[in-house]
Length: 150
Image (tube, rainbow, N blue to C red; front, side):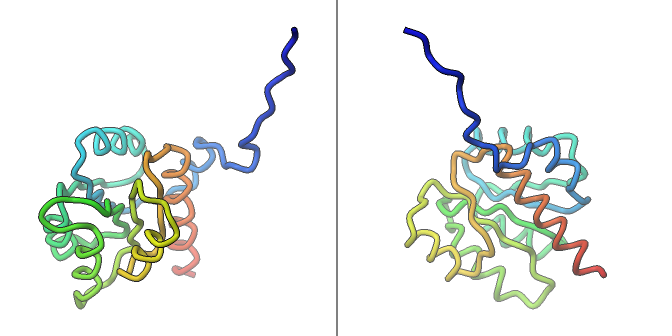
């Protein structure tokens, strides 16, 4: 029996290398309690024009948002001390320039997405986070930042 040639099922996806070229310099916070996820994300962001900071829980994320002029936050929704939804509500209540907040969650049901948006998050990224998806979100945000400067 001979098998046919594999079809490329991701033809509509942007190649990670192309997305990486479109990423502008920015200050990013990754609020993630899982050590392995922090390691992977830091590896994905290596060699990009991004100043990356990490928070291990929601309280640290809120404090970092107060102290730093963040452009973007990747916010895990399930963290100790304070979850990402509560942290987002606290950040949105602050009187300062607001960062873009992208949810990171393994819970990808419609009601989970709604809870993220209701808390004040701007976008959603399902776990496990894939490099191509992460870079695409950064490239999209870079394009929005550039358009807002015009």
